Amino acid sequence: MQITFQQGGMREFENTGIYPEYLLFNLPDTRQSWRVKVKGKPQKGVLKSKGKVLYEYSFNGHRCKFRKVNEDGSLFDWKEPDCMIIEMRD
Picture 1 (cartoon, rainbow, N blue to C red):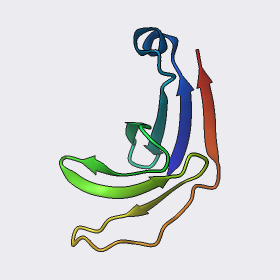
Picture 2 (picture 1 turned 120 degrees about the vertical axis):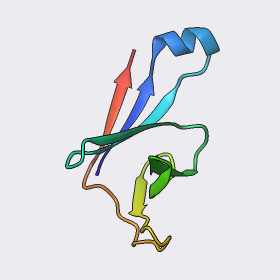
Picture 3 (picture 1 turned 90 degrees about the horizontal axis):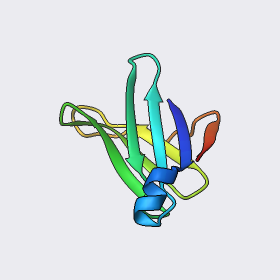
Picture 4 (picture 1 turned 180 degrees about the vertical axis):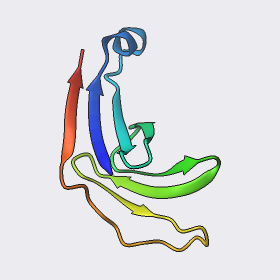
C-alpha cells in the first residue's frame, strides 16, 4: 500500500481559514484508492469498498500504519509502508 500525506490547498484555506491535510491510500495492484481528511492527530479509521471494511489505519501525525481486515472480522498484524510520501500543495 502506498500512503501519501498531503498538506495544503489554497481554495479550501481561503474558504475555511484552515490549512487542510489529507491521507491518500493507494493499492496499485487493484487500482483502489481512498482520500481521508485528517481531522485530528492521532487519528484512526477504516477504509471501505462497497460498504465492506477492508483496512484499518492509524495515523499519529508523523507515521501511518495499516492492517487488513478479513471477511470474518479478524485482523492481520499492523504494517507500515516502506516510505510515506509527503506532498505540499498550494
